[in-house]
Length: 324
Image (cartoon, rainbow, N blue to C red; front, top):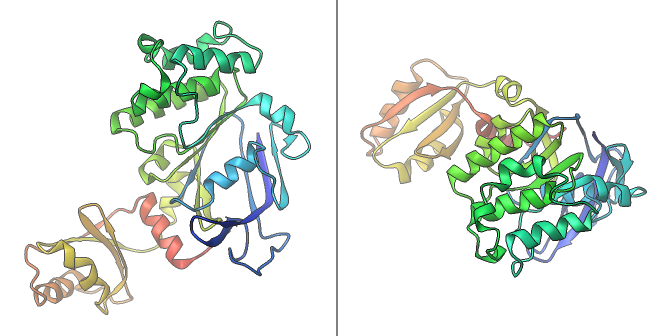
């Protein structure tokens, strides 16, 4: 449904004052792309494909190219068989796009926004109501409320309804759950899986690593390059190190102290603990680290082996700076 080959885009970011983009060997001035250095991937029909990465990784740039809002510098991309440059008019008729920032008309009511977008695509709410029914019934009681007065979760549901009202073949969702409460996030992903059952292909980006497991396949992206593309399960299986977690009574010093230890290879803060990998020495590692930390005034030290998740894999790959 989506095919991308050697796609590149480079531009100067006035916000950061640096060169940014996707698919370049280096994102800085004076470096020009190799014709084979761009992003290459495909999304299958009826698949939920996730772009997982932090802010500034290149997710929105890629979305804007695939939805024909900006032109690539090199490479090719097609959506539902149409080229993003040559066939942009056809693509705009057949895709739905929900940008990261709420972009509907805030002075129009819920009903007026939905009617407007239906009219733009030469359809009606009634014609495709079954497609949006499960989503729209949650905001229908507020159909006469202005969009700007809705809560974050309600805005999200309205934006998704407007993106679906013309029954698109492909749905592009750029960080749709950012700033939304956990309950609304869970509901939203439930909606996406129902849409998948109706044959809609979904490309979704998110900075939340826990949402990766909800996708069929994911691409881990950083600094405009893919670190890995596979199913969430396979990516976790490829984690080739023994992973440990540590806690103590001095959590604000624990990360620094671990990084200063000769036993530690890498360490990162993960919620209420520190995840770390060790160097070649493995015998009595827990005892050695506990003694090391206790000598630095840590008490209630808890060190144990854990199973990695997608975020651990992302941190390992980003540290290795391996790209595909």
